[in-house]
Amino acid sequence: MPGVVRLKEGKERKVLRGYPWVQRGECQAHGVEDGDIASLVSAKGGFLAVGTFNSQSRFRFRVLSLEDETIDSDWFACRLQRAKDLRSELGLGAEACRVVYSEADGLPGLIVDRYGPNLVVQVRSLGQERLKSIWLNPLIEVFEAESVVERSEMAGRQEEGLEPYSGILHGNPPEYAEIIEDGLGYSVPLLGGLKTGHYLDQRRTRNLFGAMVRPKQRVLDAFCYTGGFAMQAARSGARVTALDILPEALDLARKNLATNGLRAETIEANAFDWLLGAEEGGFDWIVLDPPAIAKTSARRDSLKWAIWKLVHSSLPKLNPGGRLIVCNCSYQLSLHETVETCRLAAGDRRRRLYLERTTIQDVDHPAPIHFPEALYLKCAWLRSD
Image 1 (cartoon, rainbow, N blue to C red):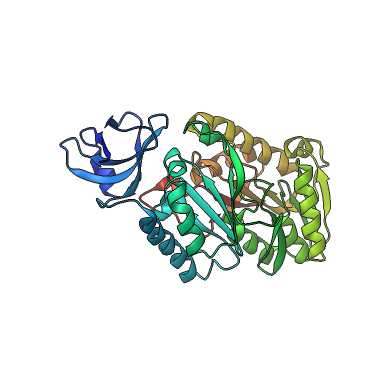
Image 2 (cartoon, rainbow, N blue to C red):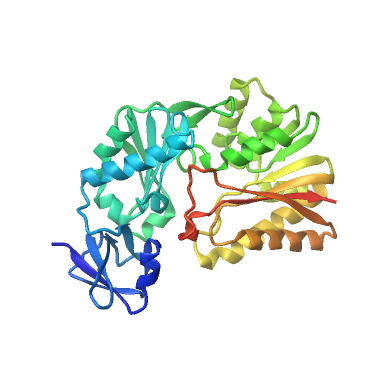
């Protein structure tokens, strides 16, 4: 018999409207241990949802279903198949794709990226960690996976009472998965690298960027990782500088460039420091796609300061009429606040910037409007006067 988590008066509306989290201070648990499946009830005792509970987390209860149903391997198989079918309808999924995006796919705390027959998972909640023995086999079967690697090394697991973990869950994965994105070949490190090995969320922005860059333009990819923006620019005939602080990332970027017969200057450096010391002028495009800085609201000011500093340092290196792409991969700072931070930096340089377009995460990272936290990646495309 599952335990019960009781909501406080007036908190049930957002759950019924599809918001998947009950936060600290909004509920009380009765007969529930951390990581357990429990029933969520209203203050008056009416059933609302079934999900997982963790008293250590900011998100005490994570909704799995608004129906009073058993959470077993068959349930997971249905949810996973639904996620797979959605990507198929979008024309994605066979090569490289996020096939499970946590709450947005009704599987809170679970992320799965697919690279051909290889899956890379991240387990972000205690509830999904406890349910791993139930969802792993359905995951393998639904996606016909030859291998499954877990890359649950994110700091957020600590709040869930979990240690970072990386390991092989199924099969014999290759060291690298070879994928094609927009006609470009990438080697994706399954057992190393950042996150799940490749930033699938930026696919839409990379492709549009490649279509807009012109031959002989100068491009700076300031946080190049494995070379996605750099390769798009090089293929368009631009003169490219790719910069990253991680030597292993640059090694892979060079490998990817060579695989595609492309050339770029690669520099191992801290982008913040390099931009301060670089000569003024020269670039027609600067791509600023820093890693996540603010995972919590307490870090918002640090993120704003980082974006201000990057834009402020980049503007003297940008040719008149040049363009900046400023990316923010944290929900904690909205698109409006991101643009406002860029405005302040430009004002301090007495430069005028024009917002030409915005892009967000690609469609395999669905963003339900009733769950705004799912929309985390925002990219502002700015043109200098």
